[in-house]
Image (cartoon, rainbow, N blue to C red):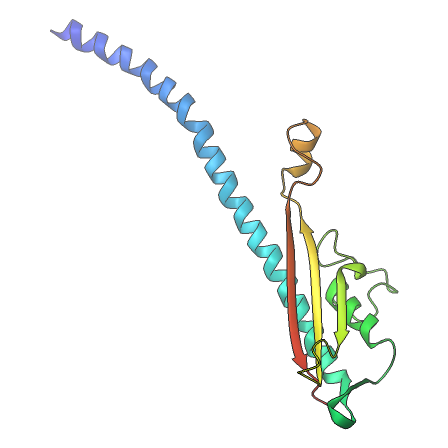
Length: 163
């Protein structure tokens, strides 16, 4: 009887190794997917916070004129807002700052004065950003993914001139 128990235990050791080989890639893939989703949420949150900072800045700089029309104090306010969103500071591009998100540029930021004729006195800021997964470059290198792998984040915020 002891011989049968001993042989049964030996056969179980091999089975546990086979199960581990089958399950381990699935667990690693699940962990990688969770990490990628968390990274994507972090990038989207960073983009929204930067956009809120730009909206606060432009709302303070814009002055509501006659008939609720918006007057910007200086022509550079739109560029300053775009710099604030992209670089985190008004003179970011001139100071050689790096973007808050890789691949984000001033061309991705659109500042519209009076975007809706029914809502005078407002400014709209729209930002679009192409998010590339962390393994996007690796998969493209291996020939397993397209060059356009990723998601397009598009966000818009409308604020009223405070001045």
